[in-house]
Length: 468
Image (cartoon, rainbow, N blue to C red):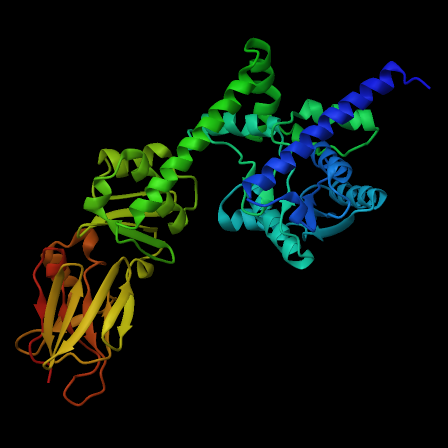
C-alpha cells in the first residue's frame, strides 16, 4: 500500500520534530554530565497549550520505555473556572490517553493576585513563583530528578526582545539547562510545534490571556515579531546567536567573579551584603557589575534595578556615598560597600544587639567585635575601636531610641537627640552606636547609656566616665 502525499508529508513532519526533541534531550543530559539511560523517571510540565502538549507527546514517543514520564500541571486559578479548570481537565485526560501519570495542583482563586500585591510585582511574576514552587514539590513527592519545560525558540526570541527593550543587564536569554529544569524545545519554533500537532491530529488548549496586549510579551509577540519577520528575514537566528555569545561571555565573567569574591572579604546576612571597596575597585568593570548584581539580588529588591543605576553607583561614582533604588540602598562606609534592603520605618533604620560574650556581632550594616581585658571593654568596628571602663557583659550595642538621655559631668541628664543635633549628625544620627550597660553586677549601673560613639563617623565621643 502506498502512502498519500499528505500522509508522507505528515510522517516527515513528525519524524523531523521528534528527532529534534530526542537530540535536544540527549544534549541536555550531556550538559548535566550524565547519560539519559541513567534516568529512571523524568517530569514534564504541561499547561494544555500547544508547546507543552507537543513536548509531552514527543517525549512519550522518543524516550526509552524504561524511563517513566510523569506530568505536572498547575491550575493558577487566575482566569474564569471554565478556562483554568478546563485546561487542567484537558491535561489529565491527555495524560490518561498517553498512559502518563499526571499530578495536578489547584491554586486557590485569588492567591496569585494576593501574592503579586504582597511582593509588589506583576501577576505573571507571582504566578511564575507559585508555579515553580509546585514544580519543586512535585519533584520531591514523585522522586523526579528533572522536569522538562516547553519553552520554544519563539519564547526565546520574545524574551530577548523584551529584555532589550527593558534595558536588561543580560541578553543571554533562556538557558537550555538550569538546575533541575531542561528545555528540549528551545531550538524549535512555535510554527514547528503547531505543524507537529496537526500532523499527529492532537488538539490543544489556547490561553485567552495570550491575546491581552497590555502584557508586554504579548505586544512583542503580536506586533514587534511580525514586523521584524517581514522586514528583516533571518533576524531571529541572529538574535539567538547573540544570546549564545552572551551566555558564553557571562559564564566567563561569572567564573572571574567567583574567584574575585574569595578576595573581597564578603560578609552577608539576611537582606545585607558587603565587601571590601578598594579591592572591588581594582576589578574589571564587567566583574564589578556581576558582583554588584549578586549583592543586589541577595539584598532582595522590590523592583527591577536598572543597569544604569548600578553603573552610576558601582562604576561611575555619580551616585555619591549613598544611593537607593527599588527597595535597596547602597552605602560606602569605612572602606566597605554595603548593599542592603532599605528599611521602611524609622524604628527599622537602626540596630539593636545584646553582646553577651567576647566575639563578633552583626549590628545593622556593621559588625561589632567586643573584647574584655583588665576591667575595661574594647569594642571594634572595622579599623576603629573604643575602650570603655565600667562596661560589663552583657551590654547593648544599638542605635538611638526616642527619649534617650545621657548623664553629664554634674550628674544631670541631657537629651541624646540634642547632642546629635549639636554634632550636626544629619542622616548619620541613626547609624551612631549607643552603648548601654545592662549588667546586673553591683559595680555596673544597669540600664544606663555609657557612651555615644560619635568618633566612628567623625564626630566627638560622649563618654560617661563614672556611672557608679
